[in-house]
Length: 90
Image 1 (spheres, rainbow, N blue to C red):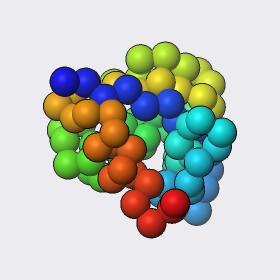
Image 2: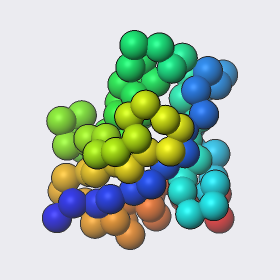
Image 3: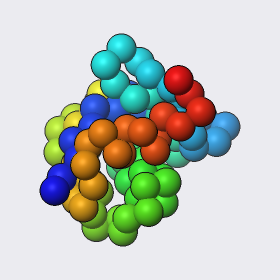
């Protein structure tokens, strides 16, 4: 089972956190700058921690160089992952 999420990343935030929805995507603010993959690494770390999976279970499938990314998380259903991430935002 693999969850597929579309996320909109806002780098250089004060803290890393879910910020709600951005159209059909989940908006996530990351504290790291978009330099040398730092924002992507912070996104993977945050998603793994928040969803209770290992970092190796989280992969950026598309959009590594842009704000809009498709992320795959092994071991979770898409609806469960969305529910956990948006808890308190809808």
